Length: 100
Image (cartoon, rainbow, N blue to C red; front, side, top):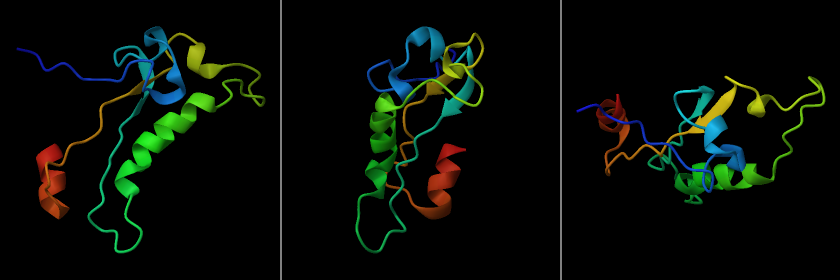
């Protein structure tokens, strides 16, 4: 059985763009959220950073003034947001090794 790459729908993906422009197969860019918080010593909360970035991206302007167009809506320039890495309570090299 093939592993299907899980990606976010419009509600949670980067820029809140439609499936047509955010599916894995047709995207030029892939966002991989990595909520890792093992190395913080003060002010915990870095593990919530990737979700906060995705949420904030829903309010970003699509139009690029330098290129005079909306790149994310051009065929083949999609942006796919994968589900976040789950380290399953592993840290350090074990965490990295379990993902690669």
